[in-house]
Image (cartoon, rainbow, N blue to C red; front, side, top):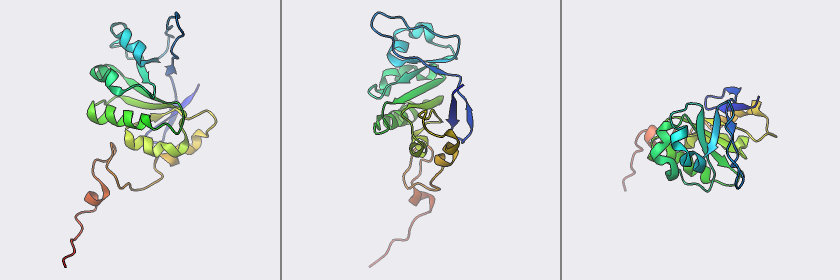
Length: 173
């Protein structure tokens, strides 16, 4: 069974299956296990999926979080796909889901997720991560907290470093 990394550094089994967008004329078949449905298909069948704790959705990098903003509180898990490690749109999606739309459920990074991205993803609001298959998951806990302090405010700490350290004295001339 695949494994995921949680924001606290624990490595656990991943019960969720990411369902691919079916081809033209094909129907989406749901397994008898928790699954993540493509966002547009979830919206099209929302009445059928809503309120089921074993069904979440995943956003592709080109899909805006506004697409599902009115329904996010119905979802136990939202995943954001990173099609390539250099595509940073998923970071913005995570911040919007957490800060603008108030999503409090599990937010997962999927796709081309690398170890050196984990702390930055955590700061943007992700709380679980599926690493790319060729990466060593045992190194992930260290990567989540590689830096002890960050200068900027983020979802994990809404005060910048200068406010956490107190006011600096102002030099007078």
